[in-house]
Length: 313
Image (cartoon, rainbow, N blue to C red; front, side, top):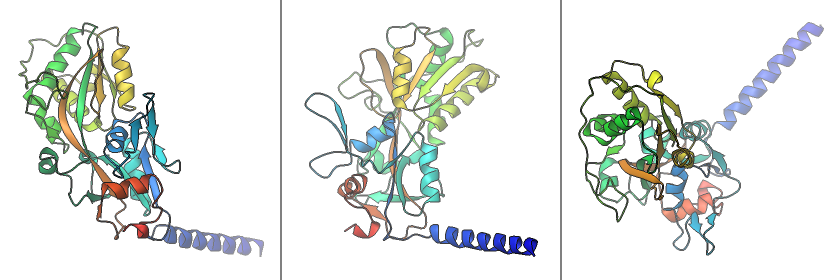
């Protein structure tokens, strides 16, 4: 009898769990929005925050003392990588987030911003507003190792175009766009394979998680030129753009390359823009209500002035 009761209890618990789970995965526009954001070290967060506005304020700005002010609601879940944001939105019908357009796949739904979908054309003509450069950084004051310098030459060349575009980002061929605004143009270089791969320590790569696919593709292509494994050449750890800038500034060996998914201006850092990327706003595929959002609506969602999708007017 006890055994039968235990079995029945298990069945009831399973049915209850399945019923609850079934309810929890349905989209309900009257439920609270799950706000998914990147952490403050993220270049994706910076690019998003500095564009999204209600017309008077942006989600991120400098106050009169030069301190950064963040207006994203404390109810937002801050995540430390592109992959986690995408996974959260994929699994939660009430969620909204933002990721690199190059990382978008069919597990999530992309929302138009101001009536414009992200694409190569809309990024280059400026009609898609939330965009940013992918930046390669090195230390200005530390002489690079021969091996690291050679890889940078590869990254500066047209050979990396395929590595970029394979992952949905836009390789920059315009020399002016490759430089920071107001600085000297940086033309696309040429790369000539050396007779022998330079000796030395591994090339250290730190920074933006959004640039993972691009830099890993480039590293693999470079390693293939010399018939070696990328893992034997590179030490890659990506934990956010600000970590990349910090690693470059602290580089004393000359073997560190930083990645940033936001513009970089620092007197200790040499940088160039390798490609452009859109920051795509994403929702769950079960969200049948939201197809387009204005910058003001995004601001109000991320500051929790809009808490339900039905409140979007």
